[in-house]
Amino acid sequence: MTTIYNFSAGPAMMPKAVLEQAQQELLNWQGLGTSVMEVSHRGKPFMALVEQAKQDFRQLYAIPDNYKILFLQGGARGQFAAIPMNLIGEKGKALYLTSGHWSATAAKEARNFCEIDEINILAENAPLQTTSLDFTEIAEQYDYVHYCPNETISGVEIFDLPKVGNAVLVADMSSNILSREIDINHFGMIYAGAQKNLGPAGITIVIVREDLLNKARQDTPSIWHYATQVKSDSMINTPPTFAWYLCSLVFKHLLAHGGVKGAEARNRAKAALLYRYLDDSNFYQNHVAPQNRSLMNVTFTTGNDELNAKFVEEATACGLQALKGHKVLGGMRASIYNAMPIEGVEALIAFMEKFARENAK
Ligand SMILES: *Cc1c(COP(=O)(O)O)cnc(C)c1O
Image 1 (cartoon, rainbow, N blue to C red):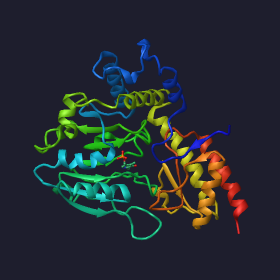
Image 2 (image 1 turned 135 degrees about the vertical axis):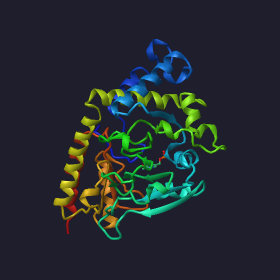
Image 3 (image 1 turned 180 degrees about the horizontal axis):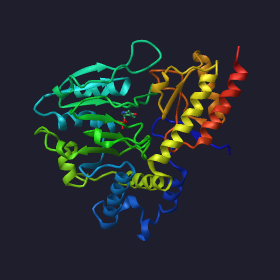
Image 4 (image 1 turned 180 degrees about the vertical axis):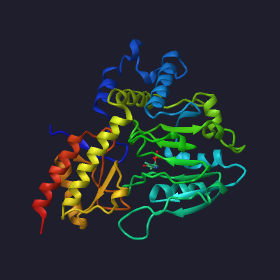
């Protein structure tokens, strides 16, 4: 069998070592004679897993003690609604910075729950790039400022922090959590669906600063209520135990491979290789300005829909899977999350060279 490299944007590839460990202990977890998915979430063995996972995640991302870590359900999209329910307070209003599909979708959902102002932070013309991120003058009129530091569909990443003075900064890190080092202290809250960089679909991580826990509106459903979930160890209802377990293995795996620092070095090397090839090529184009090029999702096109379709088909036949771009954008997208080894990027570039040679006019 040819080596398969899966460039899916999400659910995305998992570290092979993690899948092998899960396979090996599937039928007999911790000598209990059952799988981890068959034991009580409130029993000692599973509670120990949960505690360790939380500690490992806190260590990996250097999360200060005044932040709570929640493992919830409902994906990032559930948080689009939970955030206004939990964080709107006396100011009664939030600011949404939009830079593409996901930040705009978060803003749209929030409108159902509160008043918001929306500012598009993308420049009008190509290439895709962000404009000024200084909102110090206005940010404190709002209960929070929301943005998406990595737009998964277009491949736009925002490396500079928006300047918001003392306002609460909220970030949708679904597609770049644990990909590079960040200073958590700048954020009021961070959230991410697991299925890109943390584990399988079905679990969502929320990191929330303690002082923000008591603002939720009265009618917030208990599964979305951060303070309630903190009190019940993220177990107000039965949690997705198997997904939680797999995340715990991913954390251990990352810790054993240099933590987030190590992941960042690998991610920067992979992305640099691919963007350098794109810049040198006159066959493919990438439409993102260098300062906003995502380390996780690399978009490119031949500029011709038929050729793009041919590219995806032939790449798939060579074991390079899921390179078709998102339907709203077309073209191709290579998602190169933490679990993608550099060999996958090298194989992709080798294929791209061959395809360009064979199809150049
Ligand atoms: C995938 C993604 C989402 C949606 O995640 P769900 O868990 O499916 O709700 C939201 N935001 C970003 C940045 C994403 O990449």
